[in-house]
Amino acid sequence: LGAAHETGDGVATPEEARRLIASIRTDFAVGSEKSSDLHLQGMVARSCEQLAANLYSTSTHFVMELLQNADDNSYPADAVPRLVIESRPDAIVVRSNETGFTAEHVRAICSVNSSSKKNKEGYVGEKGLGFKSVFSISDLPRIFSGPFRFMFDIRNDKLGYVVPTLVEEAPLPFHVCSRSLPDPREVQRETRTQLELPLRSGVDVSKELRSTLHPAVLLFLRQLHEVVLVETHRQCVRILRMVCTAGAFLDRPEAAASAEKPPHQPPRGLLRWGHEVRSVLEYTEPILPSPSSSPSSSSSSSSSSSSSSSSSSSSSSSSSSSSSSTTAAPLALGGAMPAPDRVSTFVLFHTVRATDRGVRRNELECDHFTLVLAFPARGVLARHAEAEEADTALSGGAAEEYNEGAEDGDNDELSAGVDVREREQDKCGAEDASAEEDELGCTVGEFEQQPVFAFLPLSPYGFRFIVQADFLLQSSRERVNCHVPWNVMIRHALPAAVARAVKEMVCSRLARLHPVAMCQYVCAVLPALGDTSDFFAATPNEVHRALDSVPFLVCAGGEWRRPGQLMLPPPRADADALAELFGDTEPGAGEHGVG
Image 1: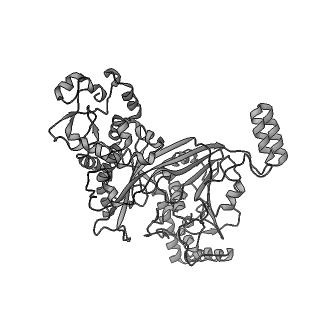
Image 2: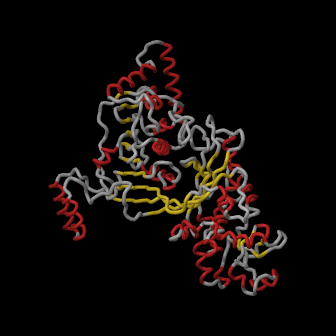
Image 3: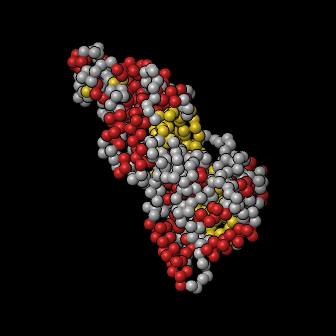
């Protein structure tokens, strides 16, 4: 799809678009009989074929590239940026309401490593390779954008990877209705760029397409907040919409020390930090009868429906009364929506730091970078996400109470700690409040691995929370480039960011209400030694060192303690014996905090 900024070489008429396509074909010496031209064409064709075949590890990587491009596009001021992906048995059709292609974009897509976004700040993509991923499923991709109508045909000539051919046919129409989609004619009218991917024989990516479009893909995109997946063969529509549900990004530098004792002195290089809660709402709806059906057929359908049940009769008759306009009054995307079928919520912690001296992001002079940690809202954080005052639950209001147990006692004074791995409170006579904490807590097994993000997901590295930053990537856009100082600088900032996020969580109002559950959550989500791999292999050890001074474990007396201040009791230790041994709890007190 198109890139973001208009340039002075915009094309206004179909005739100018035709001349541009002809000019590109001339640049590649199409039709020349010279041996030198034929040799050059062969080299280009073989290189593009190898690139398209071997660059990406999955056939559905093209979906990530399309999302990336859609987020980098420019949009009309009154438009809600969205991407509609229609999965047909014989084709994938992608529709975008972006402003459309310019001549610069057409030339960039007809080349390799010539992105119109390269070395520009604020863009997800920059390598000029992403569009080539569509050739993993299609031999004849077609693009319709404003006056441009062209295709890449590699069926008989591999030079078709980069040489465009004019298309005379009209784009495929959109005629799908559902409760939450606009009228199909409205979708078609707002579509300014349409990509059609006729599927290669034997290719079926429908299942992979569904799994690739998981809710988290929208979390860090800058513009694109709605993705619609229409599956005609399954007769269903799936809509993903990202919303910020609570919290705000903090711009005050002094807020960086809100969880610490005064004076507020932020660490060197820390510019600002804060948290917010983001949710991705998911709707799954059946495809309704097409509004283009005739009134007579609608009436017939309505009458047959009424014979089966009175409720469906009423629904059908209201549908038929709308005649050829819409069925069941579909809603416009970006407007009011019914209750979602599923909500995926994450608590995001933002850290903005100044760059190290002399470290640059490629050719860009960046004076800061942003690192975001997104923790899945499960267990105790799910309760936080549902709280009416979610925007204040992770404030620094509990800092004084948090520090009360943080500093009293040296490392050689040990307290009985909470075993967050194996708690058998039913055998210890736990009270109702403690039982409720168990329900809010989490175990390691409840957290699957989360991918590292560079605005869109990369391969997993073993973390149970999401790490998002503007990493420089390998050409496949699936792995972090291990050898550039920019990425190493971001990785060095990760342990301190994790420690700061943990401080926020255990300082929260929610942690005061459910301390054991919060302790369970934190311990379940933190990386253990050996969890992570490759570029982040040493990160768990560094995170543990950063947490050495953070009181994030709950002892039997209920105070928050640093790891070095605690010892873990045996699984079935007698509570009264432990109380007598440590001398700082009343007999029987251990039943609330010791497993």
